Length: 215
Length: 192
Image (cartoon, rainbow over all chains, first blue to last red; front, top):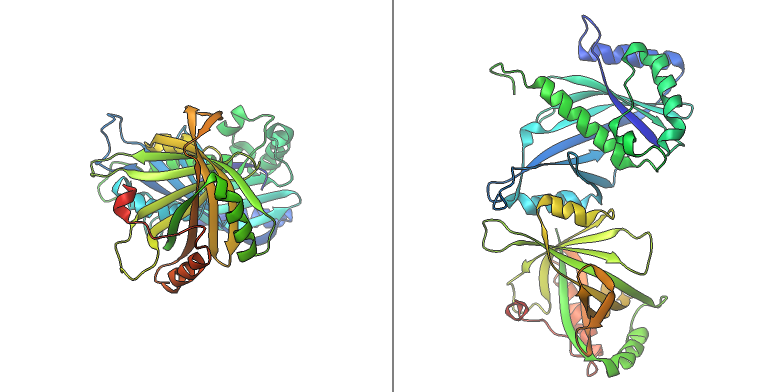
């Protein structure tokens, strides 16, 4: 998909997440973007089981993610750590590792929605849902913006930002932190997954309001 | 979940060429395939009695290939009539930061070696003839020495569970390699 920027969409005043997404979808279509199917990105969280810990380190969280843009792949990452790109058998391996890594099923988070193509840009507009059945309340919406032909962030960040600004105005996101170390080196799908992971973690924290009854 | 069936043997260095000649005749007609791989075995120790073992393998002579991560289960203590040693296996292709990732998960490298040899195929059977080299200085694959004066010969098939007809095919093929090589089902206890 080329260089990609993932951002959270602020919910429009007085509107629900669903209504905000519909508003943006109409705006994209008015711009002339073509609907091109759907997309899905999901993220499962694993934490080290009580059996580990002989090394005395605090339990780490490992994220295993999937992106419909890369249907045969699986991405496994640690926050501020390496991102492994593997084939779909990695999920089978995680089942074998269940004595060491436990799947925190309640933490499963995913974004699903529509893909739009506008010239060289691919825009993915989705709603974010949490929980094992993914039918829980919708905590947010997110946008993924990609410049398809370009893989060097430095070469296309200005163009991407201009395009996003024309659409999101003052809500245009800043330069993603993954670009920081990558100005002139090749952008990779793993960088997109890191952005999704950071976004999902941010949305999860926003949901952790200390009120009884909210998962 | 797939299983891999194994038959194992070895040949002395001086018998290698005869074996390769026989295999070229018996196996599928294809370009001779050689390999030079570096394998690292990682362990994850928990409170269970036995650690979790994963094998990470990379090609040293072919650039651009993904790394190969393999999980092998315990040998199935099954039917004594089965002609091959059978183990549950999961094979995963990965990006080249695999070892960093395994360490981040808590795995530690237990040992490593270099394997150099030839691969042949006959249908879904794979015949691998290879020599193991000890790595003299950890992480330095330039400085290696052979572990023995022989080549390992391995006949293996990866198949879904329950396909015992596969092990019959393996036995029939193994017959054709006698007396050069006697491929046999190794007693699992001898591997420990």
